[in-house]
Amino acid sequence: MAKKKKGAPGQIAAQNRKARHDYTIEDNLEAGIVLQGSEVKSLREGKGSLVDAWAGERNGELWMFNCHIPEYAPARNFGHEERRPRKLLVHAREMDRLLGAIQREGVTLVPLSIYFNERGIAKVDLGIASGKRKYDKRQTEKKRDWERQKARLLREHG
Image (cartoon, rainbow, N blue to C red):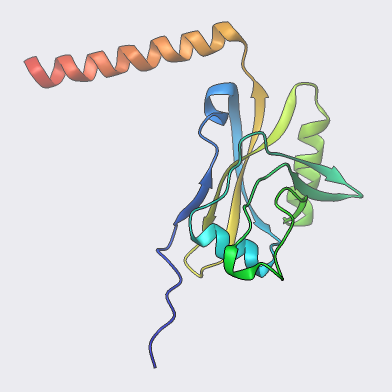
């Protein structure tokens, strides 16, 4: 009997690339996510978007809102709602720390990526983030450009 393919360990299913540009990430946290079968299949195909997604509290639990996971075509009859809120699974101590952090002004929970761990279980990388102002974004871009130029100069004249 052939082994089931689970995909590569650490396979990133969806990523929010713009989050690191728009926010200063203070801390990262791994959380489990409650998904339906068709959502898992869709994520394994690499479909999914975290643009405009955010996490917050609802009834004392942690939820991810506005995450887009498109419908899995072969599961038409048993599909899922594409932008439904999805429950996040974290330990109670981490939940208290996160809820305390988002009570502060200007701090939000931003999903950075959804990936599959070594066991094939979907996980969400959450970032505790504070928003960047326009001049902060320009400073980050200048610093990145200077590092790139410095590396290029060292390579050429090194």
